[in-house]
Amino acid sequence: MKQLTLLRIIISVFSCLWLSFAANAATPTYREPWRPQFHFTPATNWMNDPNGMVFYDGEYHLFYQFNPFGDKWGHMSWGHAVSKDLVRWEHLPIALYEENDVMIFSGSAVVDWKNTSGFGKDGKPPLVAIYTGHYTKKPLQNQHLAYSNDKGRTWTKFSGNPVVDVKMADFRDPKVFWHEASARWVMTVALAKESKVHFYTSPDLKQWKYVGEFGGVGAMGGLWECPDLFPLAIEGGGEKWVLIVNINPGGPAGGSGCQYFVGDFDGKHFKLDASARPATQPVLWADFGADFYAAVSWSDIPRRDGRRLWLGWMSNWQYANDVPTSPWRSAMSIPRELGLRQTADGLRLVQTPVRELRNLRGKNHVLKKARITEANAWLQRLKLENGLLEIEAEFDSVPSAEELGLRIITGTNESTTVRCQPRQGSLTLDRIQSGRVDFHPKFPAAHQAPLRFMDGRVRLHLYLDTSSLEVFASNGETVLTDLILPASGGRKLELFAQRGSISVRRLEIWELRSTWR
Image (cartoon, rainbow, N blue to C red; front, side, top):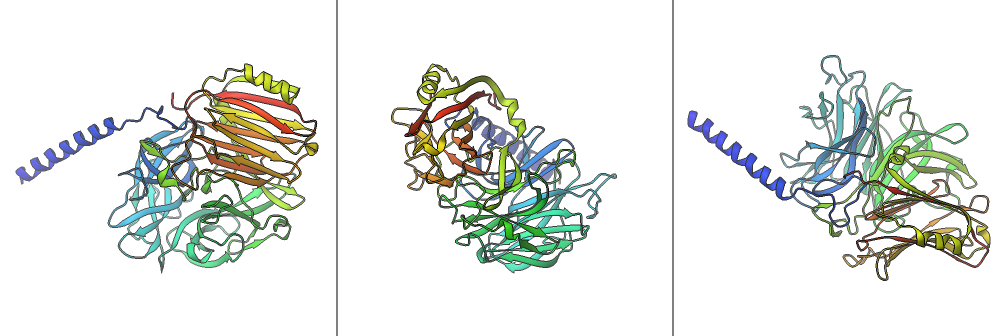
């Protein structure tokens, strides 16, 4: 017995030494080529969907699909990070590991304030994660629970798992919330290959009852995944429910994408709102770029805050495994605040970068009321030191123009173009010549979105990181998110316009600070 105990100690020490050596050998510098400087990335290895996003005791939790053993998809577990401000993130140990031939697929987390589950301890509410168990040796997915009583630092898998099992191979990504009106938990879960979501209810997170479904509309050319359901305020008053359904393939830019529906929810059924039905746009897309997927919102944001906040995985299943970064692969979008706006075409989702991102602002450059040529002369004199930029641009006399926009110039014959075409009512993000584009044939492309012009003006709000560009137009009505992989070195900005007497009403640029330095 003593010899066995000694052997275990020796093995344990050797394992710790080896893990320490391996970790040090792969310690990231956060200065690697194309490493994002203000978007969340794992320190090393593969990451995809955001999971279990919940706010508790002053911390925003971000769990995510993570491969502990490599930089491509596989061995799905839940990675974990926390932030006090949505900007700077602290990496924590892996929360939930693949084990017993069951991967930890996507899901959600909640604070069980009333301790309905009985998992709480010492009078404090537990954090409860609800996730899909994906079986690697048979075609089966079902829904599981895990709980934590130490602010999410350690987790215990529920001994009664699975809690929902309909004996299906593609039944996944549960998003759970407390429904105040019916005083019970609601789960929205995807039947991926059937283009449906099902709704379940529970008094205690452990016993679930099927109550309804939604499907057969919107984009149905791919797998329905990662649903979300929440109430959202309408600008000017009122409220509607928004149902998020991510789809792969079949997105607006090809590959994966994020669609939404607006309607009413009674605790069992979701009904589309007649005024929100698409008129000019057959499918409602949250983002028209190629790289915004699996977007879900944070649970338990305090009422005094009142915002609905979310982010998405900043990649696309067409080429996600091939993006040439190391020692990590993939990033999350910036966090965004959601709202609803009544337009001539119906209710539309509005996204704005969270206000906390303003804390990254450094040097500020402002130009007002200038011709395009004057603005370009001003831009040429700017010395933009690190290329991490927030840009707000507003153009006047837009209807008279054939085309106008902004180029981000990085290397010889390298540029990313944001192009507005007023007569077509469109906005395009063109990354065909944006830098490294040869790693996959689907990567070099120009992605187009409908654009509504307000008062004859175009308003653009851009966030430019080392390897991504997020464009918010028309005060958040139209959004495009794309990866770009430009040459290292300085970045230059250039405005352009074809025909029409276009003028720059305001151009404001902030140089942003890195969150890693």
